[in-house]
Image (cartoon, rainbow, N blue to C red; front, side):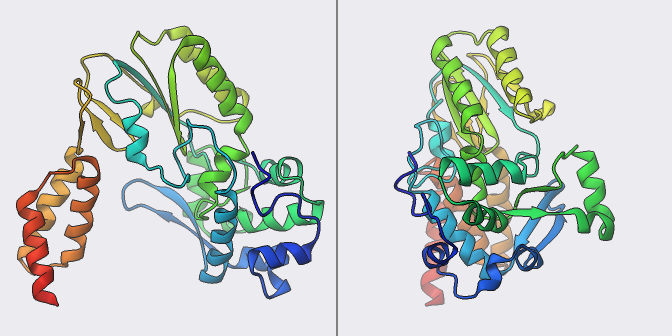
Length: 317
């Protein structure tokens, strides 16, 4: 599973720096890496912790992500895997009568630095010093910010985040690492699914189960126990069970009872609003982005708005 990853079995700092294209040894020092991450609370939709890397660190993290993408992933993983998207995740469950979904609460910040280190050390079989450096590049210690930024301290308490030093929320390798360091947890869920003849998919912190027969409370209870046993909590307000006649929502995609996919009302509203704003002289690219997102779900939606965008873009040339 891991041997195709360029980080596999690296035993020296020199080789690690070569693989990650690191020119300066300062990036092997944790204190320097930490100085290149800026945490803040993003309240755009709902409060969430963002630990944003500066550009140079972002480039290094992207190389780590690209290396991890060469690992082999099971079919049930849809996040961070080349050629798969959140829409593919929803399609997997289209046309199946019953659906149960859970959300792992504050998944990245509740994934400890120790878990990340043990993955690089034991699964990728790197030397201790290599595992230490790569872990430093993928995690963040937020302890200083708890003192200096009250809003971050409030968020950490509200979300009951257990690990101050954790998987970096703004780092590109994090979606893949959140699975890789918790592979045993997800594999246990999948084994249970095979026993109960249930489909399963994982998209970062969203885990979805579907079956043509009602999904039994016993199965659902055992899934929750697996999550809790591994040190995580479930977002109770995001646990949802759908019956055969229900309209279902999976990773932002609507699944109708007949199995066809549809664009969520929130995105439809955004397209309509931005179309009106564009006619008043607002930025065309924002409308274009929303329409593209909708078309990924429903190919032939918004033909007249699409034509309008194309005509406007021709005028701009």
